[in-house]
Amino acid sequence: VLELLRAVQRGSEDRKRSLGRLRWALQNKETQQKFVRLDGSIRTLIGIFTSSLADMQMEAARCLHELSHSSDPAVAEACLPVTSYLLTYLSGHSVEFMELCLYTLGNLVIESEAVRKQLLPQGIIPVLASCIQSPHEAVLEGLGYVLSQLLQAKEAPTEIIPLVLDSVLPQHMLRLVCSGLKAGIGAAVEFAWCLHYIVCSHTANAALLSLGALPALTSLLLDLASEIPQDAPEGLELLVCPVLRCLSNLLAEETGCKVQIQDERLLIALFLILQCFLQQHPFIVQECLWLLNNLTADEPFFCSALLSLDLLPALLQLLPCSQMASVLVLTILCNIAEKGPAYCQQLHRQPALPLLLPTLALPDPEVVGQCLELLHLLFLHWPEAAADFVTQGGRQALEQHQSTPELQERARALLDMVGQPLGASAFSPCHTTLSAFS
Image (cartoon, rainbow, N blue to C red):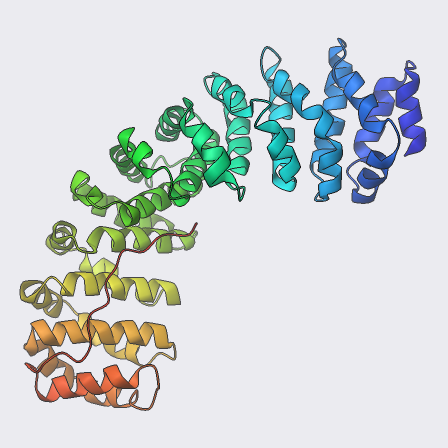
């Protein structure tokens, strides 16, 4: 390592080759740690990085980029003297050079709070706000990477997000996310995650809503669904996921949002996405169900639309997908049943009860508990469902849970309701909007 540094410092004709060898050596974690401990090592790289020789600059930038990959905070902090130069070079240089500077910054931001604290007064947010108007997809994707790392920092809600909101970044992020199908999907994915992290901070939803985030993201979801399956670009699921999360969390946080997006096409879009990604990308199923739950909670419009569009059979088919899918499907059905007799009558007409019996036999208390909540609502609002449930062997299914501590009270209450369908409720329904993953 020392020999490589000396070869670089000597400034011989072989300096470029020496930098190339150093870059290769810095892919090793131990070499990275040894290099930053050598006196003058970072200073030497900065000297070449800031020189007027473009090919040398690029090689030095690649060496710094290798160092930025280190998971050792001490290595990141050794790179503190280079941050101001990285910011300076985000204007007026080649696309490749700017891209390298951006990813180096993003990597350093992940590992070191000291780096983040230094970059803020150095003006990283105004610099990124200037860069976000670049016409180059590679630059935009790199910028999105830096910003997403900053927004995930623990101090982001108090120190970073306010600066972002005071800049032009949010409106451009929203524009780039919504133009992802026309421009580049890579940048759209990065900025969609940026929006998600801002929403999850619980500090900026009003600002995003004032920019029209809700109708814009809803429209994007409709566009994404319309691309399925014929012209869907590769990696479309990577964009769908954060868009679903943004919408889910905005709906969970902000009252009155559902009124703004009362469009039944949104339900059709969700089921098209579910159908497309169910086999290859099952994680999308959970994301769609989170959003569907938050749309139907306390909102008759989407409950009615789900039934009138005959989407209930497709929803019931998702019951066995996974433990979380089962809980969410049952919660959505509770949201519908809670709306009253007319809704419960329609649920009863569908083949819901026969599917609930095997669900009651599952060993998962959370799934069974949610199933019991649904049965309670059905029996309460539509007693005919209780009668049918008994004829299908439901009493025996309930009796097996009388000895399960967390379920026995609800199971016994349902057994009482089966005997007297119009009896008083023994427990209250469970329906709520749920925040998606942060």
